[in-house]
Amino acid sequence: MQTSVTFKNLDPSENLKTYVSDKLDKFDRLLDNPAEANVVLLVEKFRHIAEIKITGDRLTINGKEETNDMYSAIDMVLDKIEKQLKKTKQKIRDHRSSSTTRVADMVTSSSPPLPDEIKYEGEGRQVVVNHIEYKPMDVEEAVMQMDLSDDNFLVFTNARTDRINVLYHRNDGHYGLIQPND
Image 1 (cartoon, one colour):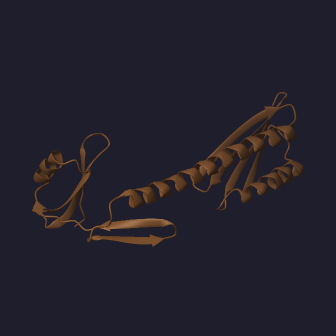
Image 2 (cartoon, rainbow, N blue to C red):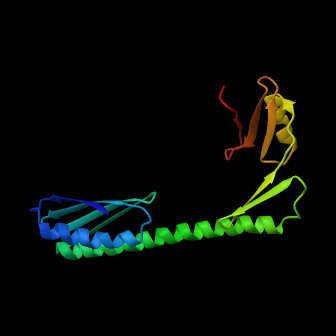
Image 3 (cartoon, rainbow, N blue to C red):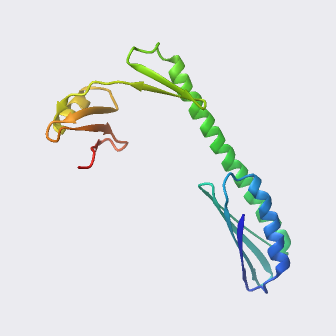
């Protein structure tokens, strides 16, 4: 882990730098990719404050602790960050496993595949390909078609451009239109 240590209102100490670096290197086992740690050690009157920010693996974790001793502040903030990191990684694992089981449940609980459905399997995931019919129409006509159906999207050929477009329901209640660049 790449570590940068900044000292404020405190004389720079190699002992503190190596102490923090050694402790942070243990977090490499929890992270999948290289990460960067920014450490700020500061003293305000009698309070010793340690702030650590770890960025990497598409996440950012912050921690701050203050005590009467710099080494105990560092240990406490590292414990706090380790808990946050483990909790975040577990959430990611749970989310990934639940999404793959939901997709598998949808595929297995659905009716037997129609002749135009093709299944691709690999790495624990299944992709079901449905072939659809699309016809030429204007965007206004596609909006009216969407109002009449319960579908979330509609694929059609734009009659004005002769290109395939996708009309979909947005979360705000309006429609979105996807069309290729010219």
